Length: 555
Image (cartoon, rainbow, N blue to C red):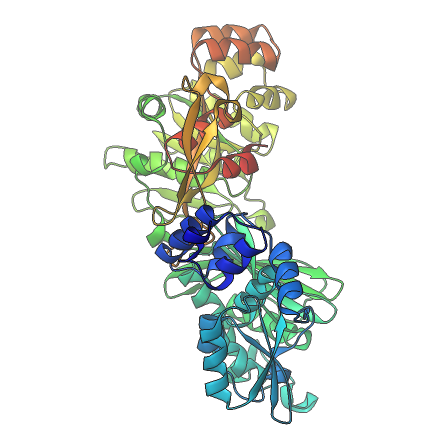
């Protein structure tokens, strides 16, 4: 044991000495953390090797250091020494309080002598150390020292001390005179979200703070908090950009605007402490309409190409909001888009503008509904129709009639799975024989996060961890998320996960007989049907995603 620990120092040596790690394991973990350029303590916690609480408790007892809780700690109030955010991010040390010639600092690894010495040199003060839980420290640093938002937050804080008269919004015939910092801060939020490949921005006013969150790869992450008194000005600025009514705060509003050729949809909703705003960022340049990039297996791709190449029939894509249905359908339209085809789409609203496609927005204010536009399309010699969503029986009836009369029709429906779609249409009053005769393919889909290829970590799982139908070996190699500079918490980008239910003669007969979904499922499985979870586990075995991600999406 002594021979092994000769090469250990710092926190690793301490944890071995206290029995929290075995020497050979500690050496291996130190090497892995170094390869991934992560602090050792960060590596341990992100990979669930030790908890933040275990390390905090051990260091506190061994070094006799007090623990500091960062909850409610306002960094700006204690930053008398103008601590550089780069310094804090690099050495993971937070200034807590300065009194006379003594500076209290908080850190999670008290063995990091280099970081402590640098802070001493930087400040010229005596240092008093407090311990902070690593997970709490990590959250605090990410929240307060985000490089791209930091400059904007400082600019915005400058207007906190202005009087009510100076900050009053002046409205004159739909024009508005603003403080420049508010405008710059809004621009920073949007540009940073685009840089982070976020799909949505949530601006949420509460009693004392206004929270800003981004949705990245389908997950919401808190990015910043600003004083609540600024929320109204941010809201008004965004309303002006979208040409919404800035005097109306009691009712929801929808709109859209562009920033650097990026389409942004805005929705406002009145809450008890102000208006919540959600911005949907639609960057058409980042959307790939290549069928090969959707995530189909070879069998699914072959089936998809066959069905969308037919002259008639209804192809339905189902799934919850944000599951990638529109991209799947537009990939089909992009594949079929030639000068020989008359292709029309009706959506609410049009999300992807595609040259060569006749696209119409639904407008409920003037009674321009899905069904109305679809009837008009049928009088304009169509070859291919796309209906953004089947929401009612009337729209479903027209789509099915179009599919039965020589047109290829694409649409979406909100159901949990491919087979449940049949029951959903029946519950809408669509006759079973119309369902059986019109539908050619039903796809259910979800989006799953892809593991970062730079930092994913292989691990061996026993056979019992994975369903037996996927493996013959006693053990199998899968990968799990780690986290590095190239990704976000171990994941980078998303890919589709699919159930395919083609209309075979057997399935048609079962639908005509009003068979239950369980009976249809049994026969579909005999024909090779894979559920979303089964398709997901195949992607786990291919190293595309992690088992925990599939569990999250397909629970």
